[in-house]
Every structure is written in C-alpha cells, then in structure tokens.
Amino acid sequence: MQPHIGISAENLATVSHALSNILADEFMLYAKTRSAHWNVEGADFYNKHLFFEGQYEQLDEIMDSVAERIRYLGHYAPATLHEYLKLTHFSERLPDDNSSATFIKHLLEDHESLIIHLRGNIDLFANELKDTGTSDFITGLMETHEKMAWMLRAHLK
Image 1 (cartoon, rainbow, N blue to C red):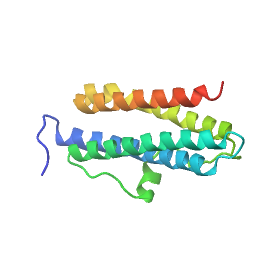
Image 2 (image 1 turned 45 degrees about the vertical axis):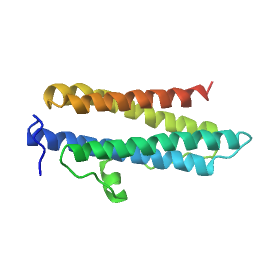
Image 3 (image 1 turned 120 degrees about the vertical axis):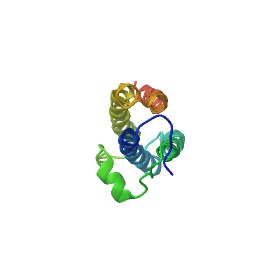
Image 4 (image 1 turned 180 degrees about the vertical axis):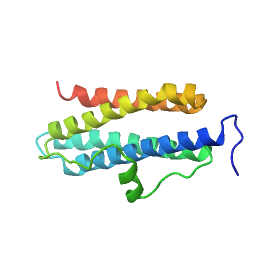
C-alpha cells in the first residue's frame, strides 16, 4: 500500500531512488571501514583496530536508518552487492598498503565526498521534491559524516 503523506508518487519514487544511491554509498564506506579494521597493521594496530570498529558500527546504524527511510516512503531498499555496485558513486579501490594513515586518508576522502553529495540533495529534497522529512534526515546524516570525518582528520595531524 502506497503512503499518502502529502508527497506525490513520482516524488516519492525519485527520493527513494536517491536514498538508494546513498544507501549504496554507505554500504561501500562500511565495507572499506571493515577492511581497515581487519587489515590495519603497524605499531598503532590495536587502537586503530578499535577506532575503525567504532566507525563501522556507526555506519551499520546509518545503513539501517537509510533503508528504513526508503521503506517509510513506500519503496524497497536495495540489498544486494550487485545493486550497491550499480548505485554507488564510490569505487572499490583499496589502499596500496595497510598502514593506519593510508586507510584513514582513503576513508576521509570518501566521507568528504559523501558529505558533499548529501549537502547537494538537502535543498532538492525540501524544495523541488517537497519532502522536508527526508531533507532533514539527510541533514542529520551529513552532520554525522562531518563528525566522523573530523575524527579521521584528527588522526592525520
């Protein structure tokens, strides 16, 4: 049953597709952060292993909230690797070495790219697609990624 929440069916579909792209990006960032957690090496192994664990746990919660938002809007969330690879704007590129600094630089680039992408959709969702709820939702996601990026950036000083 389609929701009747004051947003046209066409706009709901457009927003849901955009959220599916965001979900794919979140999944890719999650996978890369998991890789960092599993594969980091060096004298700072233990604390970076724990740091990356905290970050991927946050990303897991984010993915769940994005998927649920898609469902709120009456659509199905993508849930396969095949779909994610088609929808994401990230590459599967992994660092050349397993140092924490290299992982952090790569993850920071992806977080910053996602922040820019989210910021670019805030007004689109609110003004053109008449979905202030999703606009507010992705504003919150953007703020979470800004904090995660700050945490990553602080390790590079």
